[in-house]
Length: 532
Image (cartoon, rainbow, N blue to C red):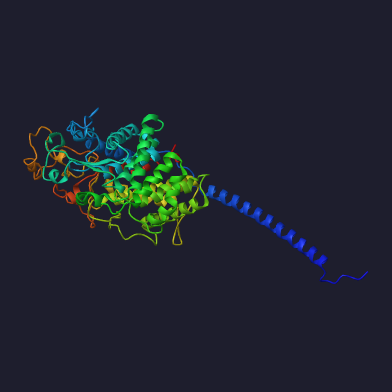
């Protein structure tokens, strides 16, 4: 028999089988090594989770929360139930009647007598978020029911403002007439015209924000009033469909709103509403909406922005980071990739807030306050602080020990310390040595730009003669307890003048931010997570 050469097919087959065996064995070893590394890494992450500090309530923040919650009572319209503010009475009882609607409830926006639906809905969304994350803290301070009642006062109004699928009433009152009067809401005799958005005059941002408000509120009331929760969710889904199908800015459809609450765009509100609807329903289509084509169009990944009534992107980033931190078994690879983009952008925002980070924003005063613009400056600092304390808690409870900021490493407590610095500034640790929260401590603004607070409850004055109270050199006769005023200038100064609306006018959404922040800081041992 002739001997086989070294290159014979039989020998080549033998080597091929040996190579395959070695290859698969290597794969198995690699898989085992990866599993071991993952288990060790996960264990280390758990080991790096800080020990839970004792559950001690900070009395300063507890007292401030009790004060801040009262401003929602100050701002209520309608037939007041269990009125807690002695100088307030029933008002706006005829609002909506021209369209056979009951729009008597809701809240006056700021220091005027207007009901602006866009910021009012945002107030409701933020108040819902605060309750959902820190409701147990509120409960311990006996403030949860007050928060829920204030929220429902707004959502009752929003339900009535949405009489059909593609119609939403977004304003009660004429701001030009209102701003040419100085009178208590209880004394209004002027006409209160209504403005709506619809298919012909779309308002995507205000419809989407209202959808976000109702979706988030549906979670708040889910275990309290199931029927009401389901009603809110139904309205939220209808409004989101309306907002998304008939896209158009309300600032273009209704040019007169530009002077007061002009919108910079509606993409952020669409993502914000979809994110809340995902949390409220568990429907993956809403998550896909935020991580797919609409995310590419509107999310502005990698470019942090300031959180405010007009721009919700920072809120979307943190809200969807919640999904990333705590996980969801149903998310696809594409959705997880989108969630990581939101989380990386949230990381960048939080890094910019830390004062010693190499990425620290220059937008802050010498006193340490985040400061973006002179109009309602505290909105940005308090909103940023709320996101910081929330992100800190997300990190803690997910066992994420480190926030990486351009090579620097920070812990959850660093974010919490930043949030504390902003809260303390508001409450008096500032160059003016005063509290910007009216009614907290003894030194706070006494000339708040607020019609009801500036006019004696028994004064018999109307539209025009009420201006004598605006010009009065005396402090306000009524205390707008809980009002968070606009705040200081860049040089950390504040001019306590009723005519100084830039600094001295409060808003309901400012209070929703401060309520969330104070609730988060009540104790260093939060009880996250859950949205169900």
